[in-house]
Amino acid sequence: MSVQAEIKRLTAPDMRARKGGEPIVVLTSYHAHTAQLVDRHCDIILVGDSLGMVMHGLETTVPVTLDMMILQGHAVMRGSRRALVVVDMPFGSYEASKEQAFHSCARVLKETGCGAVKLEGGRHMAETIAFLTSRGVPVMGHVGMTPQAINTLGSFKALGRVEADWGPIEDDAKAVAGAGAFAMVVEAVAEPLARKISQQVAIPTIGIGASAACDGQVLVLEDMLGLSPRVPKFVKRYGELGPSIENAVKAYAAEVRSRAFPGPEHVYPMKPGA
Ligand code: KIV
Image 1 (tube, protein in one colour):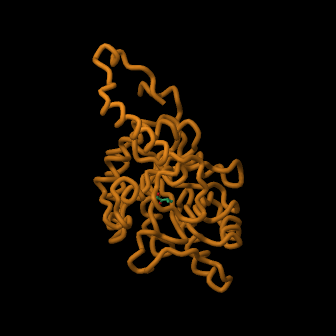
Image 2 (cartoon, protein in one colour):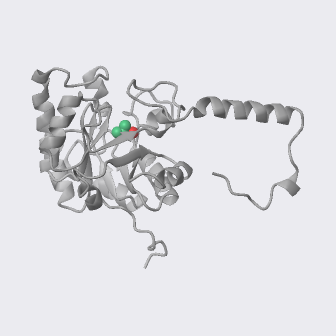
């Protein structure tokens, strides 16, 4: 038996059972140390492909690879003990066929030890989601604005402001739920549509820029901490770490320049950090 068995990790079925109950708290993390902090307060840690922008300074999520997701997914699993860890499937790793999706997802589950994967897309991904879930891969869907489709969408904008546009997004959500996903991210859709989708599907909806009408919310950790240079308008900041880090770096640089740095007698043993 695993030595870590005392703390039971949350599972995809646990999250599925939260529909209509206590709101589900989700944040992204890509590193062991931030995962440890997030794990104490969140139900799900999403290893999002937003790591392409946040960690690597890329313009979009399109260049993110499966190996990048596996490396960071593994780090987050090492740093966390309780939350369900969901790893994003990157662009190009699952869309070609349901078999391609299964091979990529199996690598993610085996090599990271995470509890579920997330993939973008509605009706056109339903057959793949059904194939995966019937073969032991718990899937979180992602409908509404789907950032991996940036090159066909042209730009990121809120969806469903006009009721006439709701139909296809509702159909996507129903298809993803019907295919067996245990939850779905609903990104950047107007509140009345988010409410309607949340009422229509039997699985939890996790909103991002989609209002409190959803069953939970996800934010990118660095966005809500004030560490990202640009953030979407809906993001509330819960910290201003950018300026604090810069002040700390400035103070450090000044001390090193004045030779005020300690010798080895002040270094060991280690003291607790965060
Ligand atoms: O990649 C990501 O962080 C995401 C969330 C923003 C939903 O997909």
